[in-house]
Structure formats: structure tokens, C-alpha cells
Image (cartoon, rainbow, N blue to C red; front, side):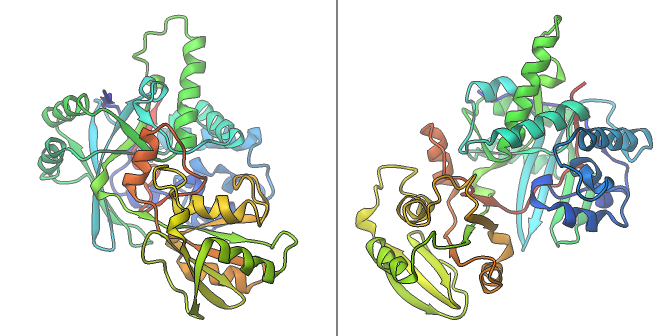
Length: 413
């Protein structure tokens, strides 16, 4: 059963929360982050993307980057930009986007639950990215950004959350991107209720943050081995998470752009497409897939609707029945030579938040030859795959809105 634990959060001094809260480290380039921190010395990007304070061209995985992250988090704590709670607490974190709300419970979850698959995964991690996050966590001594977890909706938990948000929030602001962020402290009596309720939840699911989750577990194992007095109650045995009910979550499309045809002609491409899809010309204006089994392709200024041939889909297989798996297995790999999308130089990934216009722009610029827009994976499909012990193809899900880093920080000591 799932462990939920209170923690003594470091959080922004009242009035600085809007300045401190930042997007996660992995949704911004270094150049974009530099632009955002130009007039904001309090931005938590100074911690999660510390290269913004180092010379251009600095190796992002070099020791000075991690040392700068530690220097910056220490400075925030020493100068009172971040202040620590006197007592362990849980929190409710509401995000509002386009009139839709989602309420997450902020607390710490157990590394042991991760190791024992109480916390389930649906993606493989890359070793280089995992090592990067291990170094960041170990050197800064904090979980700087929360893991995004999902659980199957439980009415009893909803009731406690509804009770907790009747109080005045400690933070309530709208970020520059229009996303609303509201945080409440959960009173002790309701915290204990939530802890008891999660003890009856069978599984938690990593929605976003596989590398950070894996790195938290690795850091815990390293510290456990080095601590002769290890008890299992140390803070490093737990990591920061926001837990959302599955019925509130919104997954967007995660689209593909491909640089070249891997030596094939366009005639070859259309012959191959006809094997796997029923094709329709959708015109020159972007057309978003409307249902599962529908993929849009953009090539030479024209959008084409690719309807998956349903008789070729193995609906008994939770992974291979995904649209993205069908595209990968039947076209991206055999025709475009993209065996492993995580390492191939012939493909890139565009989150649905950027819109289909971004796909059109990239292809029209000549940087890419062709684009594919997909219908979003559902949260049910994600959970079914995790429950089966399988993993999705890389870059299958794009959750919005993104959790802000720096609003609530967990110290490992």
C-alpha cells in the first residue's frame, strides 16, 4: 500500500512565490531559461538550470553546474528567499488552466515503494539523464522539483481535499503563461486522514518525472550504503511528489518531426503509407486528430489524414495498440530508420502545448522534412500499460499544466 509522509518544506517567503516558482528544468532550453532570469534573481531556474549563471557554452553536465546549483539553493535559504516550516506538513496544490482545475496532494512518498513497484512506471529512463539528476539531487541535497504521480480516484480522498481547501491559501497567483497556482497547508487532522487513506491505495503511477524518480531512488541507495546508522526513517528515503486523482488529469498529444526520408523517395513514402493507413488529403490548414486511430501528416505544405487500418492493430496488446506504437513499429523504424527514438538523430518531439502550428513552422523552415500529429494517449491506457509491467514508446505523453519547481522543496537532511 502507498506511503504518504509529511515533510518540513522549504518554500518562498510570502510575496516572493510568483518570482520564485519556475517551470521544470526539462521543458526549457538553456537560452530560454537565461531569458527568463534576466530580471529575476529569485527564479528557481537558478537552481534547476544553474547554467544560466555560468558562461555560455558551459558543459551542462560539468561539475561547476552542479556546484552552482548548490551555491544558489544555499543562497536562497540563507537570504530568506526560501524559509523552512517548523513542523512537517502536507499541502494541496491546485492548478488552473483554461478553466480546468486539478488538485494535487503534496507530500513525500517512499523510495521503498518505488523499488517494490507500488509506484509504477511506464517509461524507460536514459542513463545519462539519470546520472545528471543523481548528481543534482546529491549535491544540492534537495528534491528541487516534485514528481508528478497519479492515483485511481477515491471519493474518501476527494472529501478530505475538499475540506482542506476551505481555508485561506498560502499562495495564490497566476503565472506569466496564464496558469493559476494555489497552495493550501493541510491541517494535521486532515493530514492524518490522507495518510490513512493512501495506506489503502494499491498503486501510484509516475505520470511525469521518471528520471527524477529513478535518481531519488539511486541517491537513497548511495546514502543508505554510506550510513552505518541507517534506520529507514531518514529524509533521503523519501522524495517529493504531487499526487493527483486520475480523473482530473489532462494528457496532450506528443508529436513527431522527422528530418529526412532516410534515402527513400516521396513516391516510396506514399506506397508505404498505403500499406498501413487509409489516406485522405486534409488541405493546407492544420487539422488536429479527432479520435484514436487518426494521425495527421504534414508534408510539402499539405496535411494528410492517416487513418490506421484497424484490422492490423493488435487490440489485446496494451502497448502495440497505441497509435504511437503503430506509427513507430510500421513506419518510423522500418521506413525512416528510427530504431530507437531516444537516440536517433532523425527525429524530434514536440509537445502538444506548442500546437500544430509549431509542426508546420518546423517543416516549412526546412529543418525537418515531415511531421506527424497524434491523438493523445489516455490516462487509462497509461495505467493499463504500467499495470502490465510494460513501457510505452518514448515521448508518448505530455501532461499540462506543468508543476512549478521551487514552490515546495524537500530537503534530504
